[in-house]
Image (cartoon, rainbow, N blue to C red; front, top):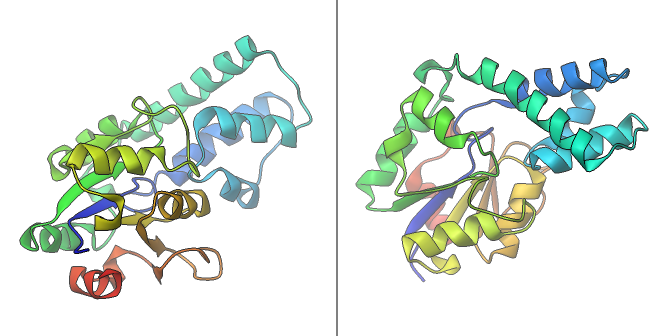
Length: 217
């Protein structure tokens, strides 16, 4: 089947908000009496807010009520939003603008597939809200990655089949989600980490649309 659509994760693909997530989670952990390292934070990439909180609490040896966990997740999100609200188009990762220009020239559809409920805010801040034909974020799904729901819903909204889609991901959970959804997956990062991806490159800055289509079709 010919490729008709490209589906993109947000964090680590279009922008890098991982540092803001880390700063907010670290602040929360510190207030709870323990710390998290940048190495530990790698486990949280591509994982939903509540699942991330569960991993952090387990790391700190804490068991809390659902009510308290919801309160903590809301506090972390408030701190995170304070940080991302300062973002501008300067925060778009290198190569993204050029790659998206190629995508449009190739006549491909685009969708965002992010578990973040803040994705629309970030897209607005960086001036890319109109760059996607469909936006699937954390408010539209019930299952986080590695469940493929965020990508299969994106394909459905674009009215294309999974086999006609390429997913761009930087996280292990996201790559697995794309593969479970029956899509060709481009991993952005290290081939030693993103072992399930069909094609791996350091970033969109290191790819052309023609290269991806040649591999995927």
